[in-house]
Image 1 (cartoon, rainbow, N blue to C red):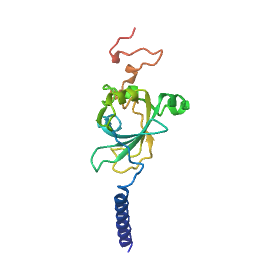
Image 2 (cartoon, rainbow, N blue to C red):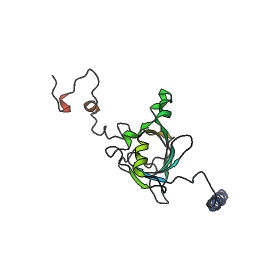
Image 3 (cartoon, rainbow, N blue to C red):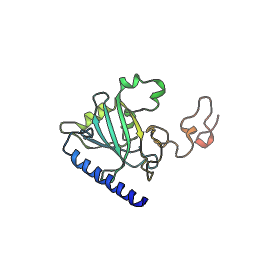
Length: 194
C-alpha cells in the first residue's frame, strides 16, 4: 500500500514538473539572461583541473551572478553560485566577510585559473570583459560538490584562492613557500641554515 502511494506521488510530481517546464519555456523568467559562458578550473575541491562552466548574468545591484555547472550537457548539475561585486563594494564589506571573497585579478590569469570564454552575447568583447572583471571580486558558494553523489553537505564558501586551490599544499611543505617571520628556512627546503 505504501509503495503504491509513493509511486503515485512520485509519478504525479514528475508529471507536474514536466508541465511547469513546458509552460515556462515561453515566458520570461529569472533564468533568462545567463548568456555569458566561461569556464575556469580550480573550483572543484576534489578535481582542481576540472573546468567549471560559469553561466553569468549581469545584475543591477552587483556586477553579475553566475551559475556554475559541473558540465555542459543536460546531465550537468548546478554545483556553485558565484556573486561578483566591484572593488568599491568589496571595500565596504565588513572585515570578517572579506575572507569569503577572491580577487579576480589573481583568478583570471593563465597561471591561476586558465579562464576560457565559450560564448558571449552579441556586441560584448571578450578581452574588454576580462579586463573589467580583473577589477572585481567573487564569492563562490558550493551547493553540490561535483565529487558527491547527492548534495549531502551543507552549502559552504569555496575559497578559490586558498593554498589547496592554488596547488601550494600538495607537497606538504608550505613552510618552504611561506616561511613564518623569524624562522629560518630548513635544509629540506633546498637552502642551508646560516
